[in-house]
Image 1: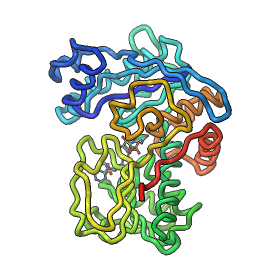
Image 2: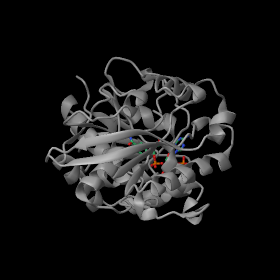
Image 3: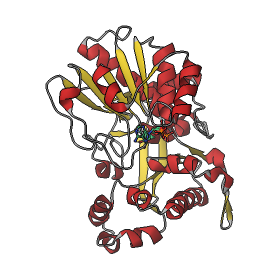
Image 4: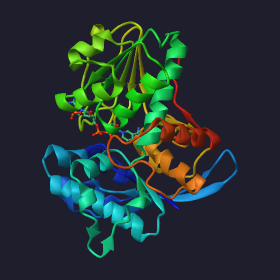
Length: 341
Ligand code: NDP
Protein backbone atom coordinates (compact mmCIF):
# COMPACT_ATOMS: atom_id res chain seq x y z
CA UNK A 1 0.00 0.00 0.00
CA UNK A 2 1.33 3.46 -0.95
CA UNK A 3 0.39 6.84 0.49
CA UNK A 4 0.37 10.40 -0.80
CA UNK A 5 0.67 13.09 1.87
CA UNK A 6 -0.42 16.45 0.48
CA UNK A 7 -1.87 19.84 1.17
CA UNK A 8 -3.82 22.52 -0.65
CA UNK A 9 -2.30 25.72 -2.03
CA UNK A 10 -4.32 28.32 -0.07
CA UNK A 11 -7.06 28.76 2.50
CA UNK A 12 -9.45 29.83 -0.24
CA UNK A 13 -8.76 26.70 -2.27
CA UNK A 14 -9.00 24.52 0.84
CA UNK A 15 -12.52 25.79 1.57
CA UNK A 16 -13.62 25.26 -2.05
CA UNK A 17 -12.21 21.74 -2.17
CA UNK A 18 -13.71 20.81 1.20
CA UNK A 19 -17.12 21.89 -0.09
CA UNK A 20 -16.76 20.01 -3.38
CA UNK A 21 -15.71 16.82 -1.55
CA UNK A 22 -18.66 16.97 0.85
CA UNK A 23 -16.75 18.16 3.96
CA UNK A 24 -19.21 21.00 4.67
CA UNK A 25 -17.95 21.48 8.25
CA UNK A 26 -14.53 22.52 6.84
CA UNK A 27 -15.87 24.74 4.04
CA UNK A 28 -16.47 28.07 5.80
CA UNK A 29 -13.65 27.96 8.29
CA UNK A 30 -10.63 30.23 8.77
CA UNK A 31 -6.94 29.50 9.37
CA UNK A 32 -7.57 28.86 13.09
CA UNK A 33 -9.81 25.91 12.27
CA UNK A 34 -7.41 24.43 9.70
CA UNK A 35 -4.58 24.85 12.22
CA UNK A 36 -6.33 22.50 14.62
CA UNK A 37 -7.80 20.10 12.03
CA UNK A 38 -6.32 16.57 12.21
CA UNK A 39 -5.01 14.73 9.11
CA UNK A 40 -7.61 12.81 7.12
CA UNK A 41 -7.53 10.00 4.59
CA UNK A 42 -9.75 11.46 1.88
CA UNK A 43 -9.13 9.25 -1.15
CA UNK A 44 -8.66 5.55 -1.90
CA UNK A 45 -6.61 5.00 -5.04
CA UNK A 46 -6.05 2.13 -7.48
CA UNK A 47 -3.33 2.33 -10.15
CA UNK A 48 -2.56 -0.12 -12.94
CA UNK A 49 0.97 -0.21 -14.34
CA UNK A 50 1.78 -0.50 -18.04
CA UNK A 51 3.04 -3.98 -17.01
CA UNK A 52 -0.48 -4.89 -15.79
CA UNK A 53 0.40 -4.85 -12.07
CA UNK A 54 -2.29 -3.26 -9.87
CA UNK A 55 -1.52 -1.37 -6.64
CA UNK A 56 -3.63 0.39 -4.02
CA UNK A 57 -3.00 3.59 -2.10
CA UNK A 58 -4.47 6.38 -0.01
CA UNK A 59 -4.31 10.17 -0.07
CA UNK A 60 -3.69 11.76 3.32
CA UNK A 61 -4.68 15.43 3.57
CA UNK A 62 -2.30 16.99 6.09
CA UNK A 63 -4.50 20.11 6.54
CA UNK A 64 -1.31 22.20 6.27
CA UNK A 65 -1.77 25.47 4.35
CA UNK A 66 1.02 27.78 3.05
CA UNK A 67 -0.63 30.65 4.97
CA UNK A 68 0.62 28.97 8.15
CA UNK A 69 4.21 29.69 7.10
CA UNK A 70 3.32 33.23 6.01
CA UNK A 71 1.74 33.78 9.48
CA UNK A 72 4.92 32.31 11.06
CA UNK A 73 2.91 29.49 12.65
CA UNK A 74 5.91 27.19 12.38
CA UNK A 75 4.93 24.92 15.26
CA UNK A 76 1.55 24.34 13.63
CA UNK A 77 3.19 23.59 10.29
CA UNK A 78 5.57 21.03 11.79
CA UNK A 79 2.76 19.42 13.79
CA UNK A 80 0.75 19.02 10.57
CA UNK A 81 3.56 17.14 8.86
CA UNK A 82 4.38 14.87 11.81
CA UNK A 83 0.70 14.08 12.44
CA UNK A 84 0.13 13.22 8.77
CA UNK A 85 3.17 10.89 8.79
CA UNK A 86 2.01 9.23 11.99
CA UNK A 87 -1.50 8.83 10.51
CA UNK A 88 -0.07 7.14 7.40
CA UNK A 89 2.07 4.79 9.47
CA UNK A 90 -0.79 3.87 11.83
CA UNK A 91 -2.88 2.93 8.79
CA UNK A 92 -0.22 0.46 7.71
CA UNK A 93 0.93 2.38 4.63
CA UNK A 94 4.29 1.00 3.52
CA UNK A 95 5.60 3.92 1.50
CA UNK A 96 4.28 7.51 1.45
CA UNK A 97 5.43 10.52 -0.55
CA UNK A 98 5.76 13.82 1.31
CA UNK A 99 4.17 16.12 -1.28
CA UNK A 100 4.52 19.88 -1.80
CA UNK A 101 5.78 21.76 1.23
CA UNK A 102 5.63 18.81 3.61
CA UNK A 103 9.11 17.52 2.69
CA UNK A 104 10.55 21.06 2.84
CA UNK A 105 9.07 21.60 6.31
CA UNK A 106 10.47 18.21 7.35
CA UNK A 107 13.98 19.26 6.31
CA UNK A 108 13.91 22.93 7.31
CA UNK A 109 12.66 22.23 10.82
CA UNK A 110 14.81 19.13 11.30
CA UNK A 111 11.83 16.88 11.99
CA UNK A 112 14.12 13.85 11.78
CA UNK A 113 14.98 14.67 15.38
CA UNK A 114 11.31 14.49 16.42
CA UNK A 115 10.63 10.84 15.76
CA UNK A 116 8.16 10.29 18.57
CA UNK A 117 4.61 11.46 17.75
CA UNK A 118 2.57 10.64 20.88
CA UNK A 119 2.51 6.79 20.98
CA UNK A 120 3.99 6.36 17.48
CA UNK A 121 7.72 6.14 16.72
CA UNK A 122 8.01 7.23 13.11
CA UNK A 123 9.74 4.73 10.84
CA UNK A 124 11.38 7.00 8.27
CA UNK A 125 11.94 4.16 5.80
CA UNK A 126 8.18 4.36 5.17
CA UNK A 127 8.51 7.86 3.65
CA UNK A 128 10.11 9.43 0.60
CA UNK A 129 10.32 13.06 -0.51
CA UNK A 130 9.79 11.99 -4.12
CA UNK A 131 12.48 14.47 -5.15
CA UNK A 132 14.61 12.00 -7.15
CA UNK A 133 11.77 11.30 -9.57
CA UNK A 134 10.82 15.00 -9.66
CA UNK A 135 14.39 16.01 -10.56
CA UNK A 136 14.57 13.28 -13.23
CA UNK A 137 11.27 14.36 -14.81
CA UNK A 138 12.30 18.03 -14.88
CA UNK A 139 15.56 17.09 -16.63
CA UNK A 140 13.62 15.10 -19.22
CA UNK A 141 11.37 18.14 -19.71
CA UNK A 142 14.46 20.29 -20.36
CA UNK A 143 15.60 17.77 -22.95
CA UNK A 144 12.28 17.38 -24.76
CA UNK A 145 11.34 21.06 -24.76
CA UNK A 146 14.76 21.88 -26.27
CA UNK A 147 14.08 19.29 -28.98
CA UNK A 148 10.60 20.69 -29.60
CA UNK A 149 11.99 24.21 -30.10
CA UNK A 150 15.08 23.13 -32.00
CA UNK A 151 17.44 24.40 -29.27
CA UNK A 152 20.88 22.78 -29.14
CA UNK A 153 21.46 22.17 -25.43
CA UNK A 154 25.23 22.13 -25.81
CA UNK A 155 24.99 25.76 -26.97
CA UNK A 156 22.11 26.81 -24.71
CA UNK A 157 22.07 28.73 -21.43
CA UNK A 158 19.98 27.15 -18.66
CA UNK A 159 19.18 29.05 -15.46
CA UNK A 160 18.16 27.04 -12.41
CA UNK A 161 16.27 29.15 -9.86
CA UNK A 162 16.51 27.33 -6.53
CA UNK A 163 19.74 25.68 -7.72
CA UNK A 164 21.01 24.89 -4.23
CA UNK A 165 17.84 23.05 -3.20
CA UNK A 166 17.37 19.29 -3.13
CA UNK A 167 15.73 19.18 -6.56
CA UNK A 168 17.70 22.12 -8.01
CA UNK A 169 21.11 20.65 -7.16
CA UNK A 170 20.14 17.27 -8.65
CA UNK A 171 18.92 19.00 -11.83
CA UNK A 172 22.23 20.91 -12.07
CA UNK A 173 24.23 17.66 -11.76
CA UNK A 174 22.22 16.03 -14.56
CA UNK A 175 22.34 19.10 -16.84
CA UNK A 176 26.10 19.15 -16.42
CA UNK A 177 26.99 15.46 -16.57
CA UNK A 178 24.25 13.91 -18.72
CA UNK A 179 23.21 16.73 -21.03
CA UNK A 180 26.44 18.76 -21.22
CA UNK A 181 24.53 22.03 -21.44
CA UNK A 182 26.37 25.08 -22.77
CA UNK A 183 26.07 27.52 -19.86
CA UNK A 184 24.59 26.89 -16.46
CA UNK A 185 23.35 29.77 -14.30
CA UNK A 186 22.87 29.14 -10.57
CA UNK A 187 20.35 31.31 -8.72
CA UNK A 188 19.30 31.28 -5.05
CA UNK A 189 19.76 33.60 -2.06
CA UNK A 190 22.35 31.97 0.21
CA UNK A 191 25.81 32.76 -1.20
CA UNK A 192 27.70 30.09 0.73
CA UNK A 193 25.48 27.30 -0.57
CA UNK A 194 25.82 28.70 -4.10
CA UNK A 195 29.61 28.72 -3.77
CA UNK A 196 29.56 25.11 -2.53
CA UNK A 197 27.40 23.99 -5.44
CA UNK A 198 29.62 25.79 -7.94
CA UNK A 199 32.67 24.09 -6.39
CA UNK A 200 30.97 20.66 -6.54
CA UNK A 201 30.00 21.10 -10.20
CA UNK A 202 33.26 22.77 -11.15
CA UNK A 203 31.22 25.21 -13.20
CA UNK A 204 28.12 27.45 -13.19
CA UNK A 205 27.68 31.22 -13.17
CA UNK A 206 26.14 32.58 -9.96
CA UNK A 207 23.69 35.37 -10.77
CA UNK A 208 20.81 37.11 -9.00
CA UNK A 209 17.34 36.53 -10.43
CA UNK A 210 17.06 39.80 -12.38
CA UNK A 211 20.39 39.19 -14.14
CA UNK A 212 19.82 35.45 -14.67
CA UNK A 213 16.45 35.49 -16.42
CA UNK A 214 17.30 37.63 -19.49
CA UNK A 215 20.32 35.40 -20.29
CA UNK A 216 18.51 32.06 -20.28
CA UNK A 217 17.10 29.99 -23.13
CA UNK A 218 15.53 27.66 -20.57
CA UNK A 219 14.62 28.59 -16.97
CA UNK A 220 14.07 25.78 -14.49
CA UNK A 221 12.10 27.17 -11.56
CA UNK A 222 12.46 25.01 -8.44
CA UNK A 223 12.57 27.51 -5.60
CA UNK A 224 10.51 26.86 -2.48
CA UNK A 225 8.30 29.92 -2.36
CA UNK A 226 4.98 29.89 -0.49
CA UNK A 227 3.75 32.59 -2.89
CA UNK A 228 4.52 32.89 -6.58
CA UNK A 229 6.47 35.69 -8.26
CA UNK A 230 5.55 37.77 -11.27
CA UNK A 231 8.09 38.23 -14.05
CA UNK A 232 8.09 40.66 -16.93
CA UNK A 233 8.06 38.59 -20.14
CA UNK A 234 9.58 41.46 -22.15
CA UNK A 235 12.88 40.93 -20.30
CA UNK A 236 13.14 37.29 -21.47
CA UNK A 237 14.84 35.84 -24.55
CA UNK A 238 12.72 34.66 -27.47
CA UNK A 239 12.23 31.79 -27.52
CA UNK A 240 12.43 31.08 -23.81
CA UNK A 241 11.09 28.03 -21.99
CA UNK A 242 10.04 28.33 -18.34
CA UNK A 243 9.74 24.99 -16.58
CA UNK A 244 7.81 25.77 -13.41
CA UNK A 245 8.57 22.93 -10.99
CA UNK A 246 7.56 24.72 -7.80
CA UNK A 247 4.53 23.88 -5.70
CA UNK A 248 2.55 26.04 -5.41
CA UNK A 249 3.53 27.09 -8.91
CA UNK A 250 6.26 29.74 -8.50
CA UNK A 251 5.14 31.79 -11.48
CA UNK A 252 2.20 33.48 -9.78
CA UNK A 253 0.49 34.90 -12.82
CA UNK A 254 0.73 33.46 -16.29
CA UNK A 255 3.82 34.69 -18.12
CA UNK A 256 2.68 35.38 -21.64
CA UNK A 257 4.40 36.74 -24.68
CA UNK A 258 5.48 35.75 -28.14
CA UNK A 259 8.09 33.03 -27.99
CA UNK A 260 7.58 32.42 -24.23
CA UNK A 261 6.65 28.85 -23.38
CA UNK A 262 5.60 27.84 -19.86
CA UNK A 263 5.56 24.17 -18.91
CA UNK A 264 4.21 22.57 -15.71
CA UNK A 265 7.43 21.16 -14.31
CA UNK A 266 7.75 17.92 -12.36
CA UNK A 267 4.38 16.70 -13.61
CA UNK A 268 3.82 13.29 -15.22
CA UNK A 269 1.01 11.64 -17.12
CA UNK A 270 0.15 7.98 -16.63
CA UNK A 271 -0.76 5.70 -19.52
CA UNK A 272 -4.10 4.68 -17.93
CA UNK A 273 -6.85 6.50 -16.08
CA UNK A 274 -6.44 6.35 -12.30
CA UNK A 275 -9.35 5.72 -10.00
CA UNK A 276 -9.08 8.81 -7.71
CA UNK A 277 -10.61 12.24 -7.09
CA UNK A 278 -7.81 14.20 -5.53
CA UNK A 279 -5.97 15.44 -8.61
CA UNK A 280 -8.97 17.51 -9.73
CA UNK A 281 -8.10 19.79 -6.76
CA UNK A 282 -4.55 20.23 -8.09
CA UNK A 283 -5.80 21.86 -11.30
CA UNK A 284 -4.24 19.29 -13.63
CA UNK A 285 -5.36 19.45 -17.27
CA UNK A 286 -6.10 15.68 -17.20
CA UNK A 287 -6.66 14.91 -13.51
CA UNK A 288 -7.50 11.29 -14.24
CA UNK A 289 -3.93 10.70 -15.49
CA UNK A 290 -1.68 13.60 -14.44
CA UNK A 291 0.10 14.09 -11.11
CA UNK A 292 3.15 15.49 -9.37
CA UNK A 293 6.24 13.40 -9.97
CA UNK A 294 6.82 13.10 -6.22
CA UNK A 295 3.47 11.32 -5.83
CA UNK A 296 4.34 9.09 -8.77
CA UNK A 297 7.58 8.16 -6.94
CA UNK A 298 5.56 6.55 -4.11
CA UNK A 299 3.61 4.57 -6.73
CA UNK A 300 6.85 3.49 -8.43
CA UNK A 301 8.34 2.32 -5.13
CA UNK A 302 5.16 0.32 -4.48
CA UNK A 303 5.14 -1.16 -8.01
CA UNK A 304 8.77 -2.20 -7.61
CA UNK A 305 8.39 -3.35 -3.99
CA UNK A 306 11.14 -0.88 -2.97
CA UNK A 307 9.72 -0.11 0.46
CA UNK A 308 12.48 2.28 1.40
CA UNK A 309 12.99 6.03 1.80
CA UNK A 310 14.43 6.26 -1.71
CA UNK A 311 14.67 10.08 -1.60
CA UNK A 312 15.73 11.33 1.83
CA UNK A 313 17.84 14.11 3.35
CA UNK A 314 19.05 17.17 1.45
CA UNK A 315 21.26 17.23 -1.62
CA UNK A 316 21.86 13.46 -1.62
CA UNK A 317 20.30 12.74 -5.04
CA UNK A 318 22.72 10.94 -7.33
CA UNK A 319 22.65 10.51 -11.11
CA UNK A 320 22.49 6.72 -10.57
CA UNK A 321 19.33 7.00 -8.44
CA UNK A 322 17.76 9.34 -11.00
CA UNK A 323 18.49 6.77 -13.71
CA UNK A 324 17.02 3.94 -11.64
CA UNK A 325 13.77 5.78 -10.85
CA UNK A 326 13.60 7.04 -14.45
CA UNK A 327 13.76 3.49 -15.76
CA UNK A 328 11.00 2.42 -13.37
CA UNK A 329 8.95 5.45 -14.41
CA UNK A 330 9.05 4.46 -18.09
CA UNK A 331 8.44 0.78 -17.32
CA UNK A 332 5.25 1.51 -15.39
CA UNK A 333 3.86 3.93 -17.97
CA UNK A 334 4.63 7.45 -16.72
CA UNK A 335 5.60 10.25 -19.12
CA UNK A 336 6.80 13.81 -18.42
CA UNK A 337 4.42 16.56 -19.57
CA UNK A 338 5.61 18.20 -22.78
CA UNK A 339 5.01 21.64 -24.28
CA UNK A 340 1.72 21.84 -26.16
CA UNK A 341 3.06 23.25 -29.43
P1 NDP B 1 14.53 23.09 -1.11
O1 NDP B 1 14.01 23.80 0.10
O2 NDP B 1 15.49 21.98 -0.94
O3 NDP B 1 15.22 24.17 -2.07
C1 NDP B 1 14.65 25.39 -2.36
C2 NDP B 1 15.59 26.24 -3.20
O4 NDP B 1 14.94 27.47 -3.49
C3 NDP B 1 16.90 26.59 -2.50
O5 NDP B 1 17.91 26.67 -3.46
C4 NDP B 1 16.60 27.99 -1.95
O6 NDP B 1 17.83 28.65 -1.72
C5 NDP B 1 15.80 28.56 -3.13
N1 NDP B 1 14.95 29.72 -2.82
C6 NDP B 1 14.02 29.82 -1.85
N2 NDP B 1 13.43 31.03 -1.91
C7 NDP B 1 14.01 31.69 -2.95
C8 NDP B 1 13.84 32.98 -3.51
N3 NDP B 1 12.97 33.84 -2.99
N4 NDP B 1 14.59 33.32 -4.59
C9 NDP B 1 15.48 32.46 -5.12
N5 NDP B 1 15.70 31.21 -4.61
C10 NDP B 1 14.97 30.84 -3.54
O7 NDP B 1 13.24 22.64 -1.92
P2 NDP B 1 13.04 21.35 -2.88
O8 NDP B 1 14.19 21.25 -3.80
O9 NDP B 1 12.68 20.19 -2.05
O10 NDP B 1 11.71 21.80 -3.68
C11 NDP B 1 11.75 22.86 -4.63
C12 NDP B 1 10.35 23.17 -5.18
O11 NDP B 1 9.83 22.04 -5.85
C13 NDP B 1 9.32 23.51 -4.10
O12 NDP B 1 8.48 24.55 -4.57
C14 NDP B 1 8.54 22.23 -3.95
O13 NDP B 1 7.24 22.46 -3.44
C15 NDP B 1 8.52 21.74 -5.37
N6 NDP B 1 8.28 20.30 -5.47
C16 NDP B 1 7.60 19.82 -6.56
C17 NDP B 1 7.38 18.46 -6.69
C18 NDP B 1 6.61 17.88 -7.85
O14 NDP B 1 6.28 16.70 -7.78
N7 NDP B 1 6.36 18.62 -8.90
C19 NDP B 1 7.85 17.52 -5.69
C20 NDP B 1 8.59 18.10 -4.61
C21 NDP B 1 8.79 19.45 -4.53
P3 NDP B 1 17.92 29.98 -0.77
O15 NDP B 1 17.12 29.67 0.46
O16 NDP B 1 19.38 30.16 -0.54
O17 NDP B 1 17.34 31.08 -1.57
